[in-house]
Every structure is written in C-alpha cells, then in structure tokens.
Image (tube, rainbow, N blue to C red; front, side):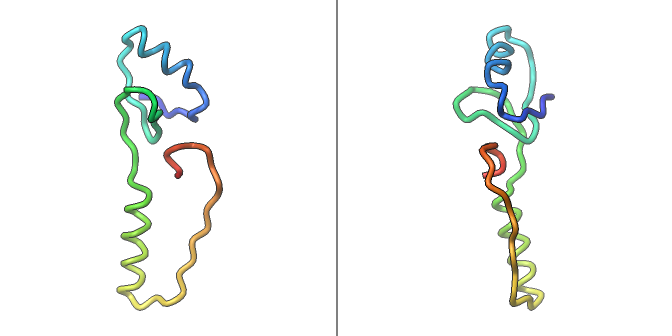
Length: 73
C-alpha cells in the first residue's frame, strides 16, 4: 500500500512498468491505470451537512484549503 503525495508520478509509473503489485491509499493518479482506495470526501460533506440540517442547525460553515492533491478536490 502506498500513501502518495501525488508528487511522485514517475515512481508510480516505474512500479507499473516493473509490474510491482501495489494499491494507492487515499490518493490516485487519474492519468495512470492503478488500483486505489479513496474516501468519498464530497459525499461525506453532503451527509454531514444533511445531518446538521436535520438536527436543526441553521448556520453551517466549512473551512478548507486549496490543494493540487487530487483526493482533496
């Protein structure tokens, strides 16, 4: 299992070429054909906000950061 920063695509490409077995964890390279496991961040936020609304919350905020890491988009 590899938890990549998505800044090492050359290393991942080399592993693919070597036919080295691996699974990317909590990241992926959309342009590469790899196995990966990621969280559904957007679905999680939707679920959380819906829950808060159902509980009567009126003012809901969300703080995030700008990131080039695909899994955080």
